[in-house]
Length: 208
Image 1: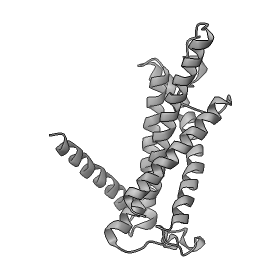
Image 2 (image 1 turned 180 degrees about the horizontal axis):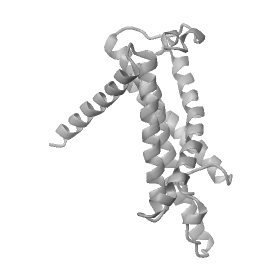
Image 3 (image 1 turned 90 degrees about the horizontal axis):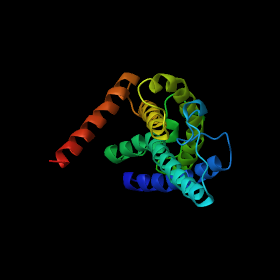
Image 4 (image 1 turned 60 degrees about the vertical axis):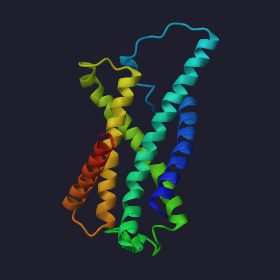
């Protein structure tokens, strides 16, 4: 499976995950989402008629769904893309058993195997749910400080959670590089930011 197929699988998986998570959030009062910041920061809503409420519910479903979509995509790509890129550039297969520390516990199966890719997608789903609650908890701790500068609206809340997800996705990518590349943790960190810098240069050059 090459990088394009990996990205396509990530997009499809992200769409499915976004639908499931928004359905879950909409039918529960405990599942976190960007449209539900801590109640103490929100102003009470005025009464609305049924059509207005339906429009608002639809807007919030799209609002949450897009958040779940791009944050899950970040987590999945952070987990799998470093491995796919190594296979592409080295021309050699990578096996699960090659993983540092965990390799002895994993089967001798190529990373590019379709079953492994689907397993990574399922792993990303489980990891994402855990990270969603971690991000919600950390964002709640940061909210009082943020509220001193910006009122905590659903947009500020989404932005805060999105930034936390980006940081966590970066940590996952660095760990993925460290596990499957012959580098130290410090080198994995520098490689990650090196790739980001090259990507930023290509984007900047494309805008000229």
